[in-house]
Image 1: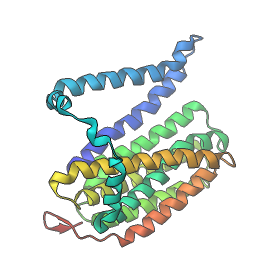
Image 2: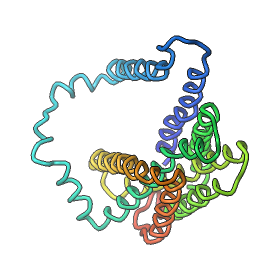
Image 3: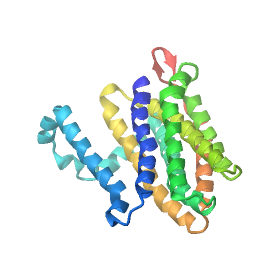
Length: 275
């Protein structure tokens, strides 16, 4: 869906600008200790500004907040919702694939800087550019590639190609030398993973009626957060043995995800076309 691609494009811009801004702040030649904290101060200021914008421009939040009850958070509601997700045959497979994809991507993304520093000898500026290159790939995927692919291919095959392509690009970092080659691989990995991400989110969203979209998106975000949280623990443990191990495990998980994706059934349709 075009709106999904546009939303992800907006998110992707931060992955480009954030690392470059951080590198610029760290490169300042000054002995003032507060300048080392400048990236975090800017992040906090941006978060406060965003909260003000949401409060000012989305008027419904003012009335909704006053009616919000936290009673629904009691009695393990979230765990019951997971039970409902994995008890539904039309949802469990896609949600599991989404979780595995996020576990793999997060492991790669979080531990690529450590690998680049320890195995490739990158300094902090080069690592920042490497992270920004991933953001460039994300932007290209959501702004150009994904909108074109959905015109000619079913979403399940975009997901399949995206996950396998991501795994291949993950693996190539062990065989490509030079900073430019690594930047290109990072951009490619960002592109391939993003088209897979948008595809699986679209496939998930069409499994439920419109009045259940918010619930389904919330569960997808929860699965995404679980993947990133587990990636930090798993990758940190593996990194203690060797900086390449988190990347190798990320490759394996992404390959499994892509292969299992072949089993996704295109039972839903948008504008008469199978997904």
